[in-house]
Length: 397
Image: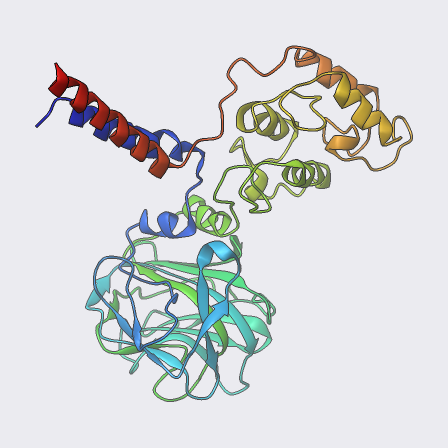
């Protein structure tokens, strides 16, 4: 092989790897990182097959579902809708036997039937070690394991919100005789404390998502259904939940494909709210503070505190921008282009202190200013062209 060709390959690989560092892990990649036993994304738009994205080829079958339902966020693709009368997903026997289990999905439930329960996932029968995962009236979630010591464990009332998307995760560990449930990354309480006779979970017969043996049909939408033969940690459950709302580009909070004023203004509002939304936590310290603002400005946008118009420089034009807004020392809500450079939603002397401490005034572009990455396809085409020119020159010699 020509000695130039490996270099050509390295150019393309470097393009892919070098600029992928700005891309945050997707929800799918977070799930796959935990090695699901089975994983249905429900992104199909037609047909009967519900593909298993775990790589284990445990595909399921759609029965009378509606495709293309809007999911909790664009990053999750689409969901399916179940009608509450006949719709369900048929799951062939999974050959699953484990002392550890995690079951995870996203639900947007219209209503819950009054008799017994509504099924999220149930095998065709009820034998020792078989799991029934149900919903009860008032939004209770049930983790039921036959002969588990009690056979069911209900959350308290009103845990699951109706008519809105919720991330629902349950874990079970037979060795610790412990089952736990999270809704939207927050652990919720059970009204029965312990399993007295732990059982190995067995999913060894045909099962249904959204029904149980022609009854207990689920009315609503469902997405991203996964089962694991392990217990996910609190941190991993929180990571899955956060990934559903994370932008594909770090700091691009509105998903526009670029870092702009809309993004930094969202971050300022989040800092001021004190809610510490994980989607805005750029420092990974479980808090959203002025430190996250520094990461967005200095590391992601690669500009200076004080760059009100986000053109990459901090100079007199930025003073024109902020003073034109007329909010200095008026105790009025201000955004980034109106002078709030600290996250308190006000424009006052503290913003000038922060700006001049960054030492960027009249310094031009930051020394490590990195241009927007070109398309890797364009890079590859250019590399191929250079390779061809090099070969031509060699032939002339």
